[in-house]
Image 1: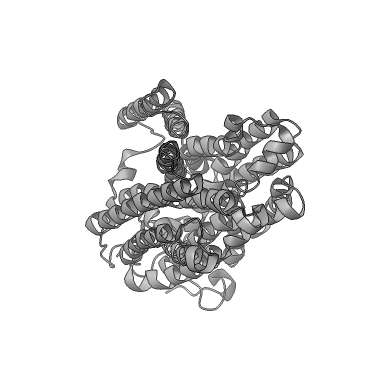
Image 2 (image 1 turned 90 degrees about the vertical axis):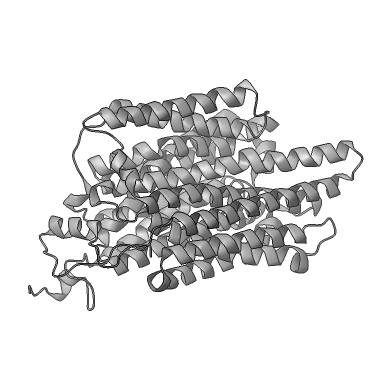
Length: 509
């Protein structure tokens, strides 16, 4: 057996051949991912102030959020494949640079069109940096147990970032200005660019050097963007209208054409074998469900406390602290439990718990509800279950993915998150609005109608999560622990290290 020094092992007790800087590299990557996820929700609380300062119309204001979601959702698959082809560290740095510059322009915007255009570019930065960063984790952590832990930390921080965005957005908007919700991104991006070159040396396994499949890239990107756009339009227009159906059906048609093309071309952008793993496919499907429920909850809770209970932006942000704290606790519990009971058990428990949490949240909604007895039980339980779910989702999405496809796997998972967010905003949120509008017309007090509509949307979301839990129990694989790990083997081959014995496969058990 080959003897390796402490440095090559990455420290005492570290796997042979491990990069000694891998945990510091994870810190840099996770900090940037935290900012990317936070930027989806950080603007929500600040929207009234943004509308007042820049003169947005009601319809135009929605594009402060939609522009980011649309471009990020549309370009994530392409971003993931570009990272596999040209190097993940390189694409991560390009994405961070694009994101940082566009954030500065967002904060300095003097016209409404300037802010929306900059948000489009921010979404592109996220689509390039996000999959590349997540795709670097399997390369940095070739040991199965370390990788599961690293992915758990990553998923946990992503879960917390979504709720922290509302806290930060409310505090910064009230204490300073809405512009600083964008300006604070700039020093983080600069620090990431400086640090990444010092703590990360990308291995050969992180790059395959293949040519870009132009047809696959165009159809996948355009198709996804069209589907997300159609879903976003459904928030303001009937499902049968041309504004919804044309982009939605056109996007689906493009994605179907992409599948046919990828099956026939010799060098596909998205190899169809990637979708042959049942655990990965199941995980990506249920990701849509939980992100639809999460973003629906965040959006409607914000409106509820501001419109029904007259909360200020600061008070709204502070109201999310219980959810933020329990999300962090749930993520820690998930990271500890996954190696012991497996991803399947953790994920199913999180989804069932999330369904119960939404029922509890709906029961606590009332025009005269107090924070402690009315709002807090739902916030605490839903935060914990989301924190429990996200590390398991990340592990399931990267289960048994090869080293050369980890960027693609990351892009698919992140794209499903964006599609889920758009689907929730396009279905559950308009349903709540229409329910409230119909009952106001029938003579119901506006506050009562709004409360009932929001609570009904939560109960529907609970049903979606319960169905997702059954889907997980029925379809998520139980993996033989003696099978070899493709990522570990690829990393060993790239560093010249021979595996002394078989390593266990990923997380799903």
